[in-house]
Structures are given as structure tokens and as C-alpha cells.
Image (cartoon, rainbow, N blue to C red; front, side, top):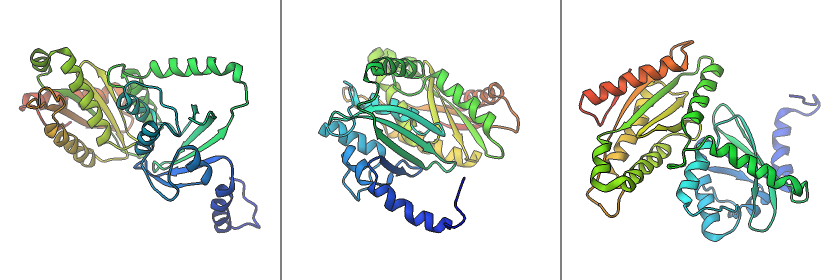
Length: 305
């Protein structure tokens, strides 16, 4: 970092909020729980945020969709869109993308995430730049997203979560990293009793509960069928287990089908912490073995590898 020695760091820290407050660029800061802690006037105006309020990113998007202000969200299923967008948000140290606003502006957004999970969002109005190439870029971005998103649940697919796991294993030093393998119990019986559409609704319900139960910096995805995986970085084995126990509790309380209010379901989990230098395949194999042990022990539980 280049810093004029005549300007102490404390003085710079005092100057920046004032400068950003007056800037036309959109600027907002989110904490590790994805709650807006600071935003300038341009950010609040563009994204329909009440100045001085501190909504979560999900609450912001719900407000935009409900009021048709701020971000344009073109979808027939808002919850699926929200799950899909949340599955990508904050998973990379830096990300750049384009977004439309209801007032007609086209904004180039960037997200920068630090090691604690705090995020700086910056947006610039690029409405007048290279409009003729925009459709190509939008099509490219949509194709890239489709290749990494599970079509049913909207969360990351196997390719996405496996890539994230490999990158995090390669980049970590002394930071603990845990993998969770989860499988819905007796899922065939659910399909047989309420049909495949009902079974799909149960899968989507678990995807939502899993994603809500972990932090923004964590990763989860559908591996296929009724099997899911989560990657929890920076948590010890016992801390990761506490997170999964809360997810299991939310699953037990869930009644995902309004047409079948009596229907509940359960999930079994296997949890493993990466050993130093352990490859992804070995880590997943140990979590899988713990998952099958959970099945043998009666299901509806999380077993540690």
C-alpha cells in the first residue's frame, strides 16, 4: 500500500468516509453476516435503501423486488433467484458484474471481501459505455452462471462447490476447514408419498435452510439427487458441528408442503476437518464415511469423522 508519510494512517481513515460520502460512485460496506453497516448517499439512492438503516443484503433485494426500485430482478421465482445469487455472493476475494436499475441505469459493481468476511461494494454508472457489446456480455455471464448453478434449488452445483473446495484447500495456511456431506433420509419414501413435485419442494426447502444456516463466506451446493455438501472455513470441528446441529434443528421444525402440513423430513450428515495437505478427494471420502455412519446409527444426526 502506498501512503504519503506526511499523512498519518489515522488521518486517512478520518478523510475517507467524508470523501466517499460525497462521491457519485456507489459505496457500501457489509459485515460478515451480510448486513449493511455503512453506505454513501449514491448507494442508498440507487438501491432504494433508507439512509441510516442497516438491512441485510437479502432484505435489500426483497425490498427492490417488492417495490420495483433499485436492482432489476427478472424472475418468476424470487426465492430461487435469491438462493442462486446468495450462493455466489462473497465467495471470492474479488468479483465484478453488471446490474440494471429500475431507473434505467446500468451499473458495474465490484465486491471485495477480506479475510474476516467483510465486503466493500463499489458501483459505477456505465450506462453510456459500449452498449453494443452489452448483450454479448450478459449472455456470457448468464452461461457462466448456468454452468455453476443447480437448476432445481438455485444453489451452487457439484462443479461450483468442488472448485470452491479445491481453491480453499490450496489457499489456506493454518486456517481450519471443514466439509459436511448431507443426505436426506428416506427420500424415496417422500417421492412415493407426495410425488416428485413434492420431493423437489423438499429438496428446495433443505437447500434454503442449509444456506440460511451457514455464513456468507461459507459454500454449499447440491452434489446430485438428495445429497448436498457444505464447506466451512475458519471453524473448528466442534464449531462446525454446532452450525450443523442448528441446521438439523431447523429441518426438524420445517413443514415444506402447505398441501401436506403433516409432512416433515430428516437429514443425516457427516463432518470432517481437513488435515494439513489433505487433498479434496480424501477429505470428502472421510466426510462421506461419517455420513454413512450417521445412517447406520439411526439417521437424523451429524457424525464427526
